Amino acid sequence: MAKTIALQQQSCSKEESLGSPYLAARKEWDERYGSLIKRAQQWRGTAILALLVALAEAIVILGVATRPRVAPYVVALDSLGHVAAAGAIDRTASIDDRMKQATISQWVQDMRGVTSDGLAERAAIDHVYAMIGSQSAAQTIVTDYFRANQPFERGTRETVQVEINAILATSPHSYEVDWTETRRSLDGKPISSDRWKGIFTVAVNPSTDEAALRVNPLGIYVIDLTWSKVL
Image (cartoon, rainbow, N blue to C red; front, side, top):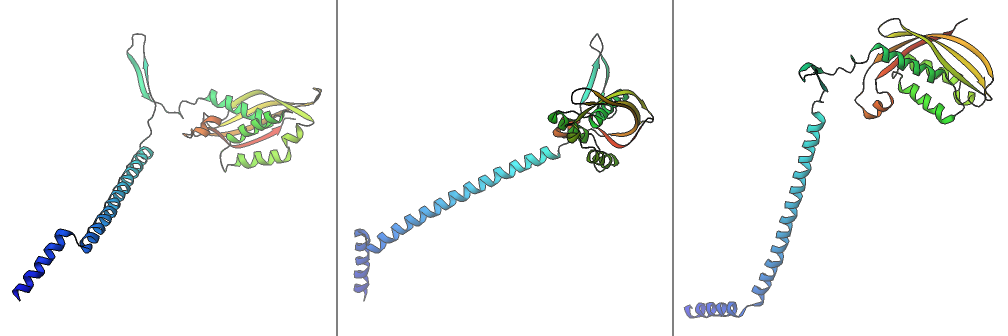
């Protein structure tokens, strides 16, 4: 019995030294499987790294979006370079009555005027709506006016020139405007000249949106209006 076991052990040792087909196949399998495991580990590492980078970018973007906006700060110096005054800019307070009057005057000219140039008329209408408060009474009134007096259709047969005669503040938010409308045929001959008066109520709401700043940089919006012909 002991001799048989010894022979078997000797046979196994001899197969191992010569390399049995079983051991060779097992070695090849381990090498292939180990390569797959290694590649899988590398893929997982790359995926985790990409996820960490995306997470870091999201944190940075969120931080920028929630960061408080920087308020402009102005420092005034005297002739010697000493600080004379300093403070943050209040854009609402910086819009004085003169700016409001000039803005309303231009708005009335764009709204009531008519030109035969379609592109210029479109630009005037866009400017009018850019200065109307959203969901305000002025929005409804102006839309109804343009619907009843279509400027593009009128521009095919006449033009209307608007001249501001006077503008007077009736309250901190309302202005009375006196203007004259001169209608002319396309060959320049006068058709009529009428005088009008209107009350325009405005609100100041400076925007931080770049697109809104381009069309209405002062943030002055007409929210209500009435007008009538002076008889």
